Image (tube, each protein chain N blue to C red):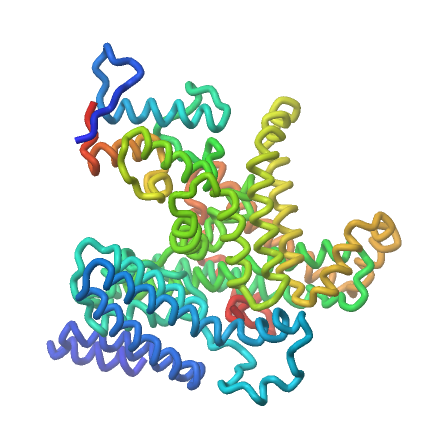
Length: 471
Length: 95
């Protein structure tokens, strides 16, 4: 606020050069980062300077030389990410499988071992890697100013959990950046912000307390499904809520970010789901993993698609369950392609409204996938899967027991949250049926005001952490 | 300048139209659809085109046109009409 007050005063006196907006934005982003985590900030600062210098060097070279610089830089960026995120997993869970790892290996390890990953490292690393590739492929290899690069990578609304922006969409907005506090930007920005706040604070956070830790006993199939269902709702409201808040804040400042979610739970196939879920990550994996890995070997596309999804699962976290989750979605896509098309054609002949059945099967498959995503303990995950395939676990007693775990007040509260979530998702469906943009109805000015009012009234007393901050 | 051979060589067909016809016939074959049901302005994903189809179709298109095309062609230009127009404008394809 002091910054904007000084800016306002100086601008009124005509003593505010445009360049100060770029400097102010960079300072704002960096100050927020350093306040969040000092150690992570040092790592980030080193990475951003190193990346900038390497890209600058690369842009001054041509052909093979430029390619070698790009390759070295990408390897460095991925190695830093691997060090922070996957080192412990690799040593304990992969090498550890052979039994050759001492329990106190961390004490003798030459580098410090971090208990948690630095905030945003998964996201800004991907943004930096994409920048290297896009700069290498750019037709015009103009030099890039350091300040513009800092604003491109460190832009505070999206650095911690995306959207993962591309050079072509965000860099031009950062070059010669000026705050554009216009009425139109405020209006649209605040509507996205209201939508995001409602999704996160009212829906996501109010669902959170009802998602129970079922370990070590998970013998009630109804409860396993219900927990996975609640988690499926919560992860969408939490992550899309964050993304829309980022879109809203950025828009108020005059920056357009990628819309990272496109009503994914309206999808009628897993293909469609992945076009609507975490769009910036899906397209990142498509452009920088799937297509380059496959190259000219297009007859192997199915294999590379499966591999890419497995890797994208592993990006989410250093644990087996994320790998399984990614592989599960890759396998679903292949199943849909090779078995689903004949099934779909047959279904179209006998079912009056196959779209509803397709939607239900897709949503069911996503809920089952969330079971893999939410359970990092592989033994508990296996117990849950065993429960799901045990007919006895679906007994009437278990059904009553599932509801019996909640008090009357909790049931009423859960009922209200579910009703709001249901209306929210229905508005997305209606927008799709009417061939509007996905959040058109929810961004309506009157709906937006209602969402803001509901957020003030119904926000969870204890806000939960953003799920994707862990990744 | 790339020369196209169309299935109907006797009639004059614009390059964009020739590419459209080729894309529609390929899509119909890959997705087991009636070609008359494929509209050039509709997103290809609406007909069930997936990532594997998208890259293999671009590969076939490369062979047909004898050109090197971006693998993301059908994501960047997600309708028959947009893809055909892009190819004509960007690669100067002619009949």
